Image (tube, rainbow, N blue to C red; front, side, top):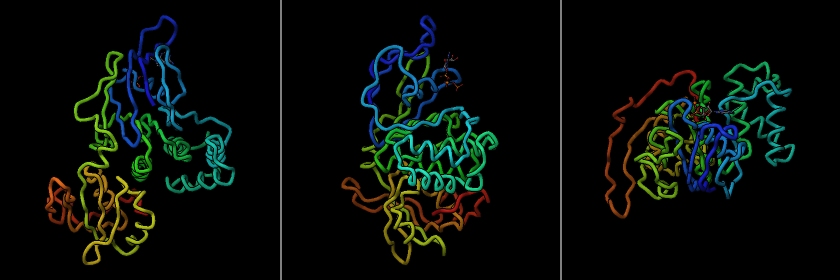
Length: 319
Ligand SMILES: Nc1ncnc2c1ncn2[C@@H]1O[C@H](COP(=O)(O)OP(=O)(O)OP(=O)(O)O)[C@@H](O)[C@H]1O
């Protein structure tokens, strides 16, 4: 998708909230948008999402897009499952597929018990789970998240982190706004700031998703507790873990997970906080043509976390 000279103002003579935005949105990338309150982030995300039109310039090459708005219209006359099934059909899924995926996402977010609850009666957090699930249902090529983590419990926040990694591993692009600087910290391929109506590229971003995939990689050797068998992880191709690691058998019964370096912290966190937790044996830079030696960069346990972490009871188990 491409934005050429895009501007937006509300009303014919209102002030320009955004002006002269030029951006090529790459495939397979995570883009972060920052800015102070009222700077125009949500305005930009609504344009990305295709639910608003620019007042100037044009947007071309729109992929299949889904959007989690900053405020979810919760008073619609549906149950949670009915709403998600309906949205699945709107996104082009066949009836039975829509209902199945709707149920799976409610389950994944720990909200299956509210499948038959009317949207208007859901708690704020459960309502937010439904808002996020509707966007993930149809595996969009472009996923637009406007403060989508707000109100989610820690387990659901992890599920969303993993879903973001899955979309990117699947070749998609995710654009997100979040006021917490730790959200997906270090994982964004590019960072932008909206200020004074302009979209500015921040230093440290602007690396393409393809560059992340081809860039430095980290090998984690970990030992799974019974019940988190490596085979099950491998069957799923690691798609539900941060960074969608390649998973193979390591030495001495360990599991070897190879992941782009930018996702390694998130992956370590997911392993250490799994129920039951994984034991990290080693973390090493993957050999590359430039650095042929497999340099051990940290022995087990990792310096920032004990080898065994007793996970918070809200943490989601690994698949
Ligand atoms: N529908 C609208 N009609 C008129 N003005 C609007 C409308 N939507 C947004 N604005 C104005 O556009 C400006 C940018 O708003 P926007 O919601 O995009 O900011 P934001 O960066 O997302 O803010 P926040 O961090 O508080 O969510 C604000 O001055 C806001 O009042």
